[in-house]
Image 1 (cartoon, helix red, strand yellow):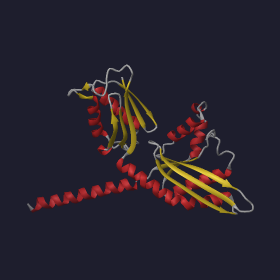
Image 2 (cartoon, one colour; image 1 turned 60 degrees about the vertical axis):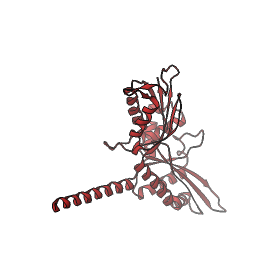
Image 3 (cartoon, one colour; image 1 turned 120 degrees about the vertical axis):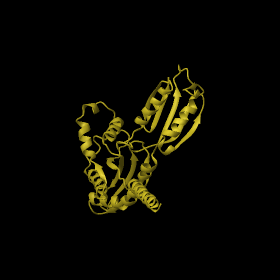
Image 4 (spheres, helix red, strand yellow; image 1 turned 90 degrees about the vertical axis):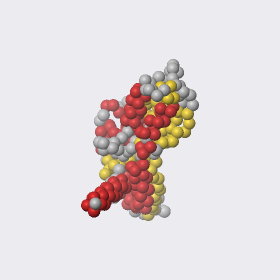
Length: 292
């Protein structure tokens, strides 16, 4: 009896240590980051840095701050050169090019940096840095900070100081929110509607149990949302909207990034198992399901 009790205590200790290790890992996972320049409407991200050495210097200083903190960073300039040599980008509009560079980066987060540089021989030079961090897969904002500095030094030196003045708070906020995404999943929206020629509605009886289609969908969502975390905004015969569904950041088996497209495939397969055909589309962090 004492031996069994000892084994049980040992089992509890090992389980507690394993749980602590998993929680510690979740909190210390750091994202891969790419720093990109802010572009105004009409500006082309492919050329925005070419004629402005000061902006290149400041962008480099921001990336350096991430590197010094131990983050893995993706070189924007290298990705930009790859995009320029890729014929597929030649005919794209400015917005599409920016989006595709971000998507092809392999990063988890992109940090958009806006640099306002004022030069004055009387009052000194001034640099204001506006940084905004976004989760690439979902587009959610993770951190926003403004840093500024002024002196009679060169712009590169002032820009580095402006970055230094805000980078610590920026990184702490970004890491805290990213860790929450790792632990609780990223938030996406799912809209389910019907093709105009569809014979189905949300009140249609489907599947082996002849449940309403809306009930089948919600039961599936409860089982497949990350940690069963979802919110149903509303449902009617014509549509069903989930405004906050959590999906994992990483595939739990492979460790690769888990995308909304993958979640959409799982949902498509589920609907097919009910005898319901559907089309799916992903726009940003929204999954659109159209039942045929």
